[in-house]
Image (cartoon, rainbow, N blue to C red; front, top):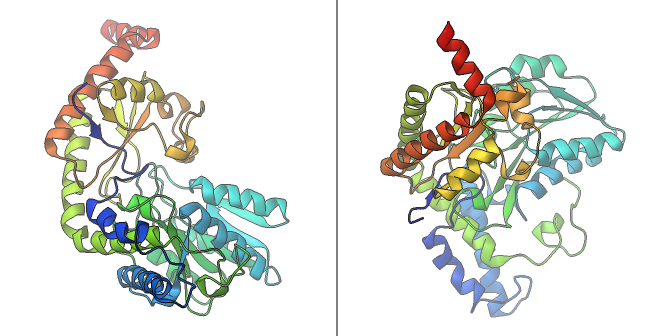
Length: 395
């Protein structure tokens, strides 16, 4: 195998060389603790301030709205549990959807075990939640609404601004998991009516193990990590300066390249979808065709098993997935595909291809030829497909 084509950027992105270069001083020479008052400590404190400012500029907010975490999962947990704990006297009702990331859904289950009531909204066949559904679900005791900005599997972008308008004047806070969306679409929490926003650096060409939570003005969450007074007393623990610096630089670069990068990804995405729909029979696109992340292609192929196709494509040098990285290896169909009411036999034949800044048209052409080959090979070994073809020939 000579060629390697990476089409799983929703799982993680390759760290930018510029980001790594920016991090290196903090991995070697600038090793001081940012809480220290001597020079090498204060220099690292400046790095934290710089990273906070860079992220704030992307979100059109103030640096003090940004709190560093270990990634999207911690940010989601902190947003949900922190809101629940701090507002328990106001109510114990939360609203979310059935297609959220596990970091939100599992946290909701945890809160249910602690006596909270969670409403799980259905989505339509495109994976879209309707703002009026949220309006109908709101109750006097609702304290939080958590809706992801864009889905990690099928790429559907939710009407966040419309939801934000509905929540104006209601006491419920509005949280959005923007892990897949940050760096892909413009995000301004204050304009969107968002109170809490989660993101993770490794989704926008930064290092793994670092993320942030945007916390709106006037909102005070309880500490999620207990100990020292780091992050203005909101999250204890010595800061991971090198990774925070890298995340800040990655956010800056993502903003600077967004327009050109996402235009290219969108063009290649549509080209890939068009070719597969015209050249591979019995396939369907999952998610919204219009309101979709630039680099997301999620297709279901009848008469194949997605996990098997992923393995076969890997042998051809193509990296993709049959769902989110967090659910890889599960035997049942993805909860996201179930939420859009895909039958199990079709859902299990789903593949997710997510494009990145280095993806080329030549990569797509090569990948499609291999996809056609492995699907044809897999179908020819499937008795159900053979019987289906024979029945169609008789008709």
